[in-house]
Image (cartoon, rainbow, N blue to C red; front, top):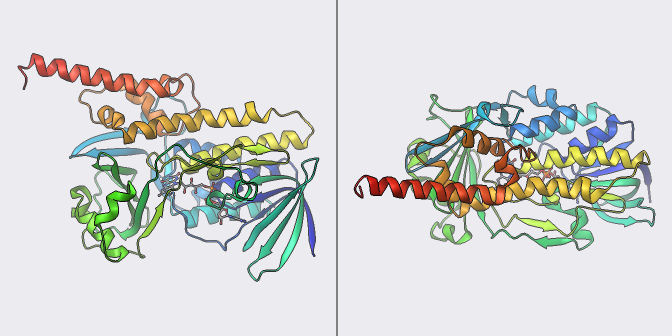
Length: 420
Ligand code: FAD
């Protein structure tokens, strides 16, 4: 069987794989990416966060992204029963990027993969990892197969697994663990957005509360196309029957905020369905490998955290792998798992707060405190490692305390106004 040798083998050419590969390559090590599919390929995850831009910049991939002319994203708008709560990243508490982009992922991921290739990383498409044999010292031999089923072996000093929903290492070594989030389902499509409102869009995404535990994303692209998706409990979708197009048209017709704009518009492809995406793993690293991006844990799409967690984990992992290859001591648990869990758990509190409606109370409250709003805005911008921000540091309690204060204030005002 044919065999090759590299310093670092990266599995997957998504945002996680490409950011990690770029950094390790920049440090002078030989890096190879194997990617199961041919690019461009479809993947969901179209709204980026400002923190993600820092990782792309450090990986030297920012210009490649900017060249694509993606829609600039300056904030996020939440809507419930006609009440709007607008977050502008320019107002955020943490010092950082004040914008990100709304991207068609096929083009974004292709730009990143082309970018690392131009930097000198070999990217081999239609090459799927089938098996990995780790040696005592952490080095490994990976068996890959091409589209015609031909196999070969790649020896590597270290593996970075950025295989996303493919979950290569957790699957091969039985590391998968169920997430503590309940299963959810999404139905989504791209539309020709001929009735787009130009006054407050397209420079932000909109999240519409359809029911307390069902919401809609509206992500406009620079091309005049818009992504729209419904997310909720799987049982919520049961009453929508017929073809996927009929189900999607039924969903749109039932949500007044999107109905006016999207009823009868052209769908660019048959709506897609995804469900039960939250899975985690028993460990984020092992002798000779590290997991980055979705393989570690994907929570929920509501705050667009996926690509940001993918690129930040790869930025961190890439730099730790460089130190390891240089013979330095790395405390993987402290320097990787604990850091990543700080960010993941902050987002987890916000996701839970969204579905138990604590965040609805906060977002749609009257007379919001602008300092608090700036701090919550930083979380929505992906700055979930800024412990100067008490809405990051005390993520598990701060939101509930704030919602309680709002309820109390509303009750007092109700009494003072003679129960009106
Ligand atoms: P991926 O982008 O999945 O890339 C992994 C790559 O690995 C793929 O190209 C795959 O082909 C390859 N691969 C898999 N198996 C193998 C194998 N055996 N051998 C070789 N290659 C392999 N995130 C956001 O940031 N914003 C959003 O608005 C957003 N919306 C979402 C909506 C929904 C409904 C869902 C479910 C997710 C959403 N996400 C969003 C999350 C986003 O999809 C992921 O977090 C993101 O794609 C993770 O990037 P990644 O690089 O880890 O994995």
